[in-house]
Length: 534
Image (cartoon, rainbow, N blue to C red):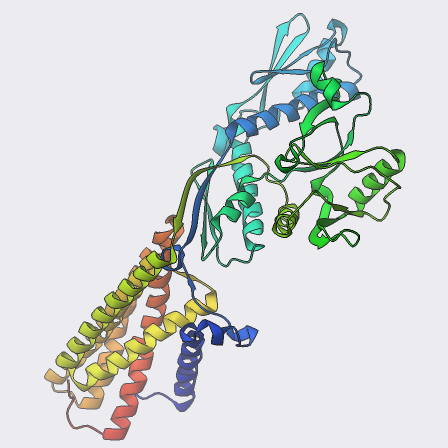
């Protein structure tokens, strides 16, 4: 039936009004927008190509991943053989891509059996089925060689990329930016795009640091200078302080008392005694217990706070620290303390990341893109409006009103979803205008055909809307499927285009059939036409 019940009409109008209302904040000046209530501050986020920002491509250091895997395997070999009381003639060592250990001949069979437990199966999708994480070779004379397989390295790379993306997102979000784009590219690269970021150098510093925090004891057996002239003890190593302090050497024990993974919070602050910027941290229950034990056993000794193998502070333990919290000082600036707190809260990266590509898009270029996008949308819309008016007269006006509401609803839904609008997204909106008009053209041409067959105005209009619905749904569903595929397999600009196109198709079906039908129905009820002006 052409006519719509009052309840349905009110529901249609209320839905269109609410969604269009969500688009209104996008057109407020920034000063006014900030004064709106929090629930009303939903707006379309402009992408990197529209408002400028930073584009960084990171690469996971495969050598670092392999080194960590080998070091972990070496430690596991030592632990497993010690727990099994298997005799060895020397500690396990790393040679190239292999961990070697010499087992006494009398314990060789038992040792091999225990070491085979370290080789776990790799998923069949990745390794083709049946492959294991470690190859074990008995080289004779008690020498056992353990080699990490390539599938195991590939699986670890996949895990590192996934973990790094989560940590990068936490770091970027904590510096106050909105809608960063973080996605994997290939097997070992991560793309980071941060629209609107005014300080790209700060982003590089945050992303370029692994942020591996460790609390270790300073070795008191000799000075760092003596260790440099001779050789450090086997359980210690030479680490250096920060550049701004002249990179002083420290002799640090390799044993880690507490790791950064035990931190639950880190906040910038100021030392009440000196007024210098500091970072205040708090451990979880496990970290608090280990830190309390370490400070109780080493009162009067210096301990080192090591960040990415750099000693940022080496205070003396004056008294046991039992409350599970403390502070880090090290000649920080206010921003330096804040950035360190961000890194510690977000967690350490599982491997080193290298910046291999960097681009900064200036806001001027983004504004130029916006102006050109506006011009294209305006020219396209004006041509469509003129065509519809010239071809269908009054019904063309109805279609133009529906298209205008359609565009407003697209911006409203983008605001509700918090989606990012890119330049390809603007192209998707312009395309949606054409698709929306196409749906009206199908309806109107069907009405013309019914009129030529001798139908009355009301029955011709009703038949036009009813019989064109199947064609409209078929064409829009196929287009929506294409948009869904683009969104699923596309990246960056392709996804931006797919989002606006997909949303536009949903609003097009709503406005072209439901809203336009409502407008025409009220016009017929008001005018009672004897002919159809189409």
